[in-house]
Amino acid sequence: MSTEIDILADNPSPPMSPALRRDLMSGVRRQFLTTSSFEHLSMQFDRMLELLDPAIDGLDGLLSDATDGGGATECTGRLAADLDEQPVDEVDDLGGQLIDDVDDMDDDALMPEGRILVLTGESGAGKTRALKRLFRKRHDKLGGRLLSITAPSPCTLMQLGRTLLPQLGYPIQRDRKEHLIWEEVRRRLETEDKRVLHIDEMQHVTQTANIDQQKRILNTIKSLVQRRRDPMILVLSGTCDLADFLRTDRQVMRRCRFVEFGRLTLPESTDPIAETIENLVAFTPLTIKPEVADELAGRLVHAANYALGIAIELTCEAIEEALRFGDTHLLPDHFATAFWLRTGCQNTTNPFRVQHWTDTDPTQILDRPRTDVDPQKPAPKLHTAPKPRKAAKPKRGRGGRTAEGSK
Image 1 (cartoon, rainbow, N blue to C red):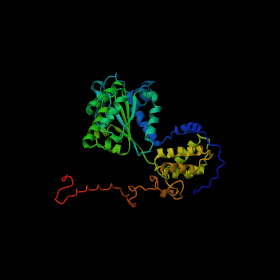
Image 2 (image 1 turned 135 degrees about the vertical axis):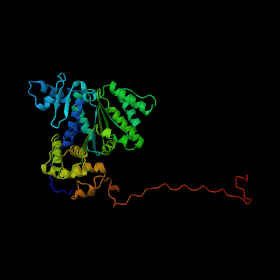
Image 3 (image 1 turned 180 degrees about the vertical axis):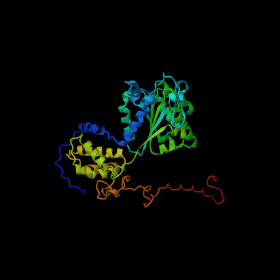
Image 4 (image 1 turned 90 degrees about the vertical axis):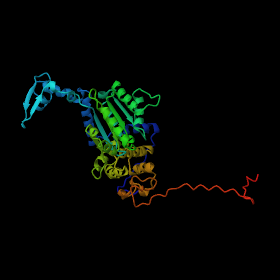
């Protein structure tokens, strides 16, 4: 193998038993890399949780800080004004009159609508795993109020409703109209006290919808979060075109908060990915030299097509290859094998085997380039079915009659 670093591996130890290797890799795959995008997602979700219950994440603390000891700041004290106080009229610097009167407060001000958290990113960006961790870490706060499903593919709005109802304890025994299904979904969400609804792969519902279906999807989304008593948080995750779809409706867009898991970049992602490799190896009996991790990081980002989730998957698969053969060091060879097992590519197109790895195409499999990303490559020839043979005409006798007519 041609690499820029010469590695001398120790004599391999006996291969690890399958059961022990499986348990060890289970622990490795449970590790989670916290990124700035995940922290942004967590912050947005925690703020939305305050809609469900004022006791969640500090809203009660804000009120108590305003009353304990009288030492609250001016901003906090003003926001947490006691509703039992007498109405007060104040004038701002611009001459407008601010009215602080409990009797004039409407229900909309006291009971905000639900919100929509939209998580987008390309396939392999780690969206699904990030949301699972987000929900798991907040299990005590959510209790049984969370429902998470994955939209089937392909999927219509009716199929999505039919997927939801059994999860809400209402199996569908007969065909029902779309609007009746969603009326039952909304009723069941309320009676079952499901306050957080997560729909993964939401692009399966929107991608093939025509104009009329798109309007019904947007109206259904609005109807789920419009209620002000017991408001709901709707979490939608999918590919990047999901955000574009939701932005077509202003009423939906103003209720949304968008978070995107972007692609990795080079050289900015080199150091974090190298550190991630070392951290994952630390959970195993293997070792890896820092210079090897640094050399592998850029190749790994490229091989994963700049998707964080795939980069971590490839690292776990490389670690498993090393354990499978009893090696003591994690080497570039293990990554090359893991990539080959995924794509079936030859050494000449394997980013862990060649020197100029940036010239390789990580989406290429079986040495067949993708013509949609490389217009210079000729499009593959389509194999068409042979044309059916024409039926033979019946032979005619001397008198012009067919053979059958002569019988």
